[in-house]
Every structure is written in structure tokens, then in C-alpha cells.
Length: 182
Ligand SMILES: [Zn+2]
Image (cartoon, rainbow, N blue to C red; front, side, top):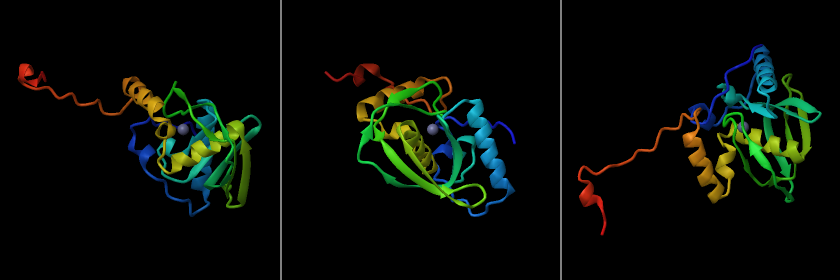
């Protein structure tokens, strides 16, 4: 097992919906161990497989005294009650924004041996379970920000030194005088 390179926003693997795990083998155990080791090294509260370039439905989490992994996770229930809070992502280093999330969720899936697992989370763990499950569908938390915050986020992302988003194309007219609307 080893620490893997974390992919940044702009890497297509983060936008590709992941495949479910069908074989609970040694390869899966290596993936879970790599995710855990990479997450703890970063350090982060959670890490999803696409963030290390693997398109499988697996994530790890480490919030307070809850540390573990979930294979083929599904959010089976989430509260109508919402929570406010800052959210960040290892794929957008150094950036956090306010995002409303359900206050309590239940996630179901499997451990690396194929045994069914259910995790109930509130507060930060609830936020983490929603964030990591989103990753497996190619959804990044900035997609969910309110329009104004999202605009600011996109600008900050374009300007970030780690950003691999293509630079916006600036169209210039060859005759600047004629481009001015009077
Ligand atoms: Zn993330």
C-alpha cells in the first residue's frame, strides 16, 4: 500500500461517474488501504477513489472517532433538517465555501470483505458522507454552491496555481475601434 497522488479539479477522472465494485478481492483491499493512507497523510476528512484516479465506488472517511471505508455507498436517508458549515475538498486544495447540507444522513454499502455496512452520521460526518458519495457520481461540492458563491469559487479556481481548468478564451477583435459599441 502506498500514498497516491491526489487529482485536482480539471482532471477528467473527477467528472466521470464511477463503476460499482463487483469483486471484493485483494485489489479492492489495496485500493481501500491506499485511500486510507493517502487521506491520513493529506490529511483530510474523506477521500473518494476518483481522487486518486480510480473510477470505482469506494471512499474512506475520518471524522472525530469515526474512521472507515464504504464500498458501493448509497445515501439511504437524509434529514430535511439542514446544517450550515464550511466545506472543502482535497481536490481543491486550500479552498472552502459555505454549503448547506442535510444535518443527518444514513449511508449503506459494504466493507472491503463484502459484508453489508450502515453508517449513521450527523454534523461533520453527515457532510462528509454526502460529499464523498457525490464524488462517485462525478459531482464536486462547488457544483452545489449558491450562484453567487459559485461565481466567486470558479474565479478562485481558475486563478489557483494547481488549477488545470483551461484558461478562458479572450476574443479580441482585429479592429478594436470597431468593437466599441457607442
Ligand atoms: Zn472532495
